[in-house]
Length: 453
Image (cartoon, rainbow, N blue to C red; front, side, top):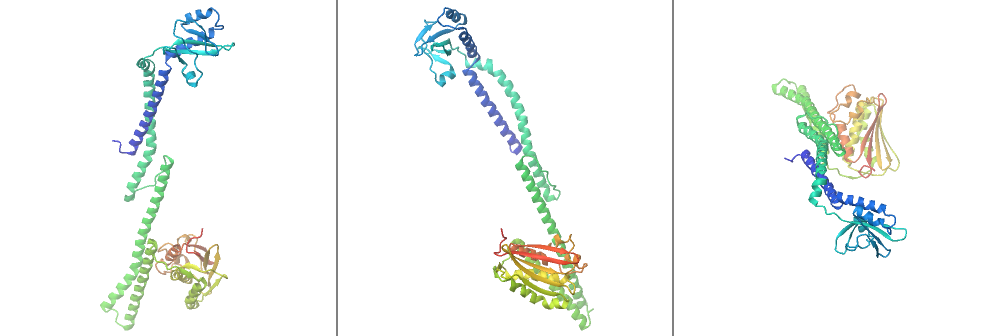
């Protein structure tokens, strides 16, 4: 019955409220037991008599005592009885001035009988005490006559209001959680919507975290769908070419040696393209899973970049592009995987060569700044449109369509791999580009292989 959070919260609040009401009732009972109405009436009489006594040595004292049915005594400062309107009764001592005695305002006579009293000091230094036997009040009569009815009425009203309030508080906490559960159940069906944060602060924070998690999962699912679609698209073209030319060779359509050589070259090139894409996908999968084994060792950045320049100089000369590298003096060694970093700058330079026209230039610049090496690959190409810059490191994104009028160059995985390798080294990449003026891709790599603080 009380398995849900809402019912348990309601029950907890109800028990807490009942406990609080019970404590209040016990306190009231104790108060009334120790100070019932008869006691209060007696004290009224005692104070009235005390107010009428101006001089305890006069004969009016006995008249006041008889009229108000009280006993009036005077004591010396030492506690000796000086006068008593009821000397036949057992002697009553001068009450002590302890805190307990002042709180209870009761004193015992020699027989153990309790007296209620008031006490004040006279100008002469003597003490005037007005006393009366403490009335006997049955506890059951006290509860039924004075306490039971108002306690029941007030308790029932307070309990009903408290239970309604407890239900409202339980719903305030449980309803947002129920909404969160419904959204979580709808999520696998693809019909989940972001939930509006409400309720207590902690529940609102939970709902915001859920919304963020759902957004990340939906983004990941969309990326996976796009990935599968893009891979299928990229494989379709080379497979079609391979299948078509292989069918032509089998059918004998390709008759001349030149035609057979051309068909074989197409099959070889498309197979090589598929092989490179398979290797790129394997690298991305390893990087995503964090299992790419980086062979970290000290790297001399000038030597690494000079090797890249030497590798691409023939291709750059053929394209009419000037390729060079400049370095700041005293560059410290960089801790990293030399082969993977060479792959990074190879892809960046190769990408720059594709989009830098004849007569342009590509420059590799390296500096040391605040615990990291910054390597910039600057080109004087056509630049990248501002709307394309945030997406150039996305997988299968064809940035060349924005920079080269749509000419197709590969599957769009190179820059994605560059981004992941740099991230695996604890680094980051930034891009500056202007249409018609060129592009600068800056790679920030921490010297110790970790992101600088």
